[in-house]
Image 1: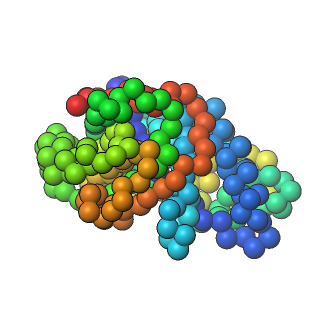
Image 2: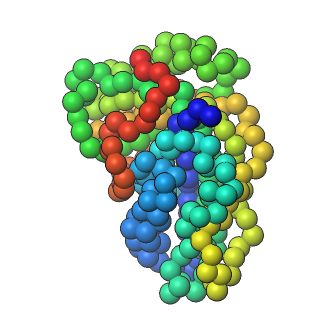
Length: 242
């Protein structure tokens, strides 16, 4: 079977009043992302804070997946550690934070412009937008390049863009007890999402007027927190390049 690269897009919001945000972030940054990468699911993981302090989801983690099929393989996913520290007195992340997870299949990486081609390391700002279209991925690549990238390419600090198409969504399992020693994901695949494309743009700094240059819905602007993994800039095996 062919390997299909993809993305796990995970937004979170801690809600437990007995858990400080710093404690949650220390665990997520130094333990959870490391576990997700080291178990073999992701090549790397990046974490961001929402630039809008009033947004419903304050945090985003994106995991670039060499093989999207692993994300929907229950035998593999049961071995992905998601347990929280015993000191929290909770079992798994759904007990302390709300989360929404979505899987996406990589359609195309649009290479950076000449002025940013040689930059290494992480991008400081990530912007995402959802775009609904009835076009096939092959057709939409052309539309995206024509109608969406033109306004992006001229922005100062622009690095590159990735285009994904929706795969299956996820829903939380029932909470597990703090005494449950088993590893394993606390989410499982649900229904197929409506075909939606996810555009992910990397910048060194956010555009001055995001609304004027980024088309789509549910636009998010995220500031870099941390990353873990390999190939911090060029990482994904891509089905095509432009």
